[in-house]
Structure formats: structure tokens, C-alpha cells
Length: 405
Image (cartoon, rainbow, N blue to C red):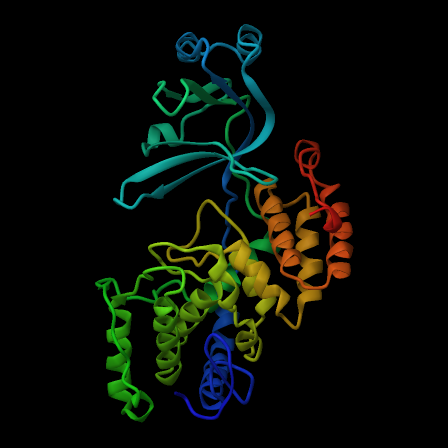
């Protein structure tokens, strides 16, 4: 399709070992060179705040006394009195809790209160319609609960968070804020990959697109950016092919902002699908090498999009922790990544949630390595890093030895 094909992977690969031909890489390189002056003038000193978080307790009560317990929660019974009165309740003490707002599929604003689960499994979530007075409300020594009536397939139950302290959000240390700023500057948050008026559909790119005039290529790119392609199943690669053509045409028309967002979407597998089974993940590569061939700091870029914050710039690009971990295994600088991520886990200047996220990033990276000896050595390294986490976190983390998995 693009000529000079060297091998066949998920996408066609050229003699340069990349999914973009030399001519395209040359154009991208020139764009990056011209952007380097812009990077020096980007706002790299913006203050970012960590996600709102606190340390709380969780109770779960099933079958017995649920209605009575519900009344006690409404009357704000103390935590100590509750666990004395309801000895059958399951209790998890001192868990990391996060509070954030988001839009659901119907564009309703929702507040989510979430437990950050440190091992296998899912943490408790309680969600409410968004209201400023609820989001900013002081919650110290209060409860938030969900009550479920008995049905033919489930037990009557109450699940609740207890908040010994209010949520807080600390400034992200300058070292990490600069990584976020670099990512925002490089990706350019003033634009989006798809146009605002984009609608679901599919557009077939003509086979002779490379022979089109610059004006026609620009029009073709606009048409591609006007379509939202949704995968029909796990094996439907049409969303990734669509993003690939957007990336290629963006490079051809010197549109760096759209190119990078498209390539990062491919790397992060950031696409909608009707269904998606894990068996399909393996064939979807991350293509980090293409970025490393350009004159940008890929380590800073990927770490910048791995960090989470309360006040992101509009259109900030968040990386998928699992996919970023896999991409790092394919990086020429994976040892630099290793050291940086371990340092994040150990850093008391970084908020607890981002330290835990760094831990998960390291595990994802390590799980995607093929050498078991290397994996075991890395588990020893991360165990030492985890030992520097606060007690309430490190005592709950269970790192599984490679041989016992």
C-alpha cells in the first residue's frame, strides 16, 4: 500500500523498520525541529493539583440488619459504634479513596468516590449526580453509602465509605508538573484529533492518496477527522486503520498536533469498540519506536501523560497505564524508564495516588517483559520501592513472585 514494504505486522512495515516511510519521517522530523523553539516558550511552570484523595474505611453488611444499619448511617453513627453494633459487617480500614467528576454516556456530570484497589480485584465505587455543594462538601467523620434491596438474584446489603478526614488536593511537585507541561506543549491541547462536528461512520481512503495535491490531501484529512469509527468486535481493526490514515495525512500536510494525537491513540489503543476481548490485545502494537526516531523526549512525554491531576488543561491527553507499560518494554530507553518510575514510587513529594499509579505502571511494564529472570529482578526492585510507601499502602500490597503466578 505504501511501497517498499519490508515485513508484515499489524500495519505494513517499511525497510526503515517503521510503520511510516522515510519520506513521512523526514517531514515529521522537520516539524519537530521547528517546534523545538516553541517548547522553550511553553508554559512549563503551571501549578497542577493532585486528584482529591483521602484515607478512609469501607464497610459491607449483607442479609441481616441492613435497614437498621441504614437508619444509623443516616443518623451519622460513629465508625466505632457501627462496627460494635454490627459485628457481622466486613470492614476494610485505611484505604486510599479518590474523588473526581466525569461525564457519563448521556453527558450527565457525575461524582465518583472510589477505592483504589492495590491488588487483583475491583475497588468499591459510589457515584452521585454532580452538585457543587456535594463535590466541595466537608466529609470529615461522615458516611456515604449505597443500599440494595433483596432481589431474586442478590442479597439485601449496605456498602459504605467512612471518611475520618476531608479530601485534599496538594500541588504536584515541580519536577512532575514540568513533565505534564511538556506533554501538553508537545501534544498541543488547543486542538483535537477529530473535529467537533464529527459523527459516527466510516470513510474509505483512496489508494492513490499519496498522489493527490496538497489541497486535496488537506480535504481528505478533514473528511477523516469528521468520522468517528467504532469497532464492531475485538478483531475489528478499522478504528486503528482510520487513525493510521489520519496520522499519515497529518504528516503529509505538516499537521503535527493531529499526527501526534493519532499516533498516541494507536499506541494507547484509545478507541471505542462494541466488545473487546483480551485475546485481541496482543496483535495491537504500541509503535513507540516511531516516536523515538523523532527529536522529542519520549520518556518525559510518556511519564507526563501517565500522571493524574485535578485540574488538567482542556484536551489534556491521558495515557492508558497498561498500554504505556507495554510500550516501555519496546523502548530503547527502558532502563531510563525503570529508574524514573521507581523514583516516582519512592518519592514522598508525590501524592499517594500518583505513587500508586507509578507502581501499576511498573507492574504493567514488567508483566509485558518476556525474560522471567529480568521480571524477577524487577520485582525485587519494585519491592524495595514499595517499602518506601506510607504504611497504610505498603502493608496491603502483595507482590507475587514470578514462580508462584
